[in-house]
Image 1: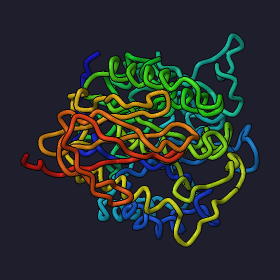
Image 2: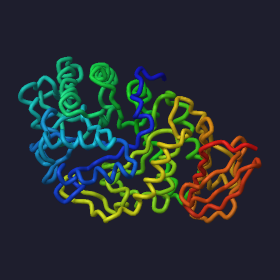
Image 3: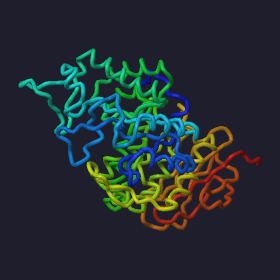
Image 4: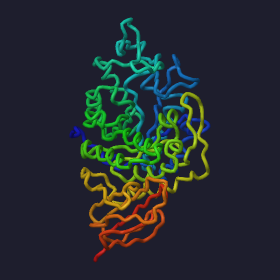
Length: 436
């Protein structure tokens, strides 16, 4: 399926970092979060995605603080996090650091005491008794009615407010597949007239392919579930992982960006931290997410890495260290995305090519090549140290530097052998062609 829209240029290679303001600091405010901006920019983050910043409904609230995703207004700023003026200042500071800012947009439903329930009750679906309801078993929210044309226009006007008045750069659209795709087309046509925006969908495009025509990127739930099952079943059947990867490559429009992740607010709170789900495989998956075609998604605290499930409806702050242990790891790999042409996401998916290796029941290997730049990535998805992994180096001759060890490796034959530790990885980088 071909996309009906062109992605804004900076979004093709950005790194998206999800900010959970409530749990980011002890204070849980914009003011307390702002000192982290420079650190995140230094780490190589390109886009900050803020969980909903709108006020939370009190009626049928879950826990003492309620869910971010049960809003009481689409045009107000949540007093839990600060003021609208503080938000505008944060967006400006982020932009000055080279960061983009997108906000979570919850279009399918609102909280029970949203201002529309009083001012525009016709905007909502109603059951046979004429009462508001939610069709998905979420008892703190109620569904909007997308048959109502006035509601659609009012929703789009609210989205425009955040772009025009606060300068945001796009939207992460919550449970996007629950909202009709033609609404997102309508919204994008209207909002992109203001400025080019980034549109990230919370859905898997393999399950909802029609949404690929309007969004620039979307989640890879099938990949996340497959890798979790792979690790928890003693790392059996790596070939299934290859099949899932190929599905994304064969199914998505060339311009579309699969968003790779191991954690987010839902996964962390309800299904476990990445440490629980993946153990020592987590870093290997982070390498894949940053080097395969698409966009890496990070969640609050993964750079620590955060070892605990964060409560969703109560205060439960992250415990930050002076220097998060994985800051340098992410910094190296994200910097590479910005400096090596082979990692630039283009419409040519063939530039990201799986290559043969001698231990293919454990090792995933691929190369990315563009002009004179080339990247060879080998990831050991097993708990075994592999002293000799031979891989195909045809069409990749030259002198490479391994990203993390700085070891120099000269490829001049059709194959080369390298050692990879358990759950380890090698990223071989070439910046310019060597004459032979």
